[in-house]
Length: 75
Image (cartoon, rainbow, N blue to C red; front, top):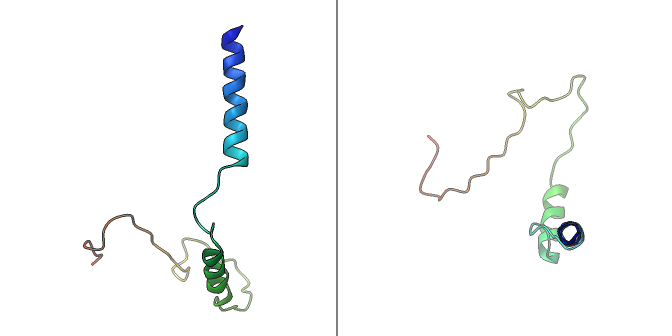
């Protein structure tokens, strides 16, 4: 019985903490949100095309993120 109470307590604590108090570090500050909105405002609109742009399309824009240091460069 006590194990059941422990698991229920742990589940509700986990649910309550992580779903109500967890905050993503990105865009948490006022300046960060302003920078994100400013970057989105600078995106140029384009005319609608007849076919949707797919990720495999060579015209598709691409952003690469890396957690490695700046010393390693792509050739």
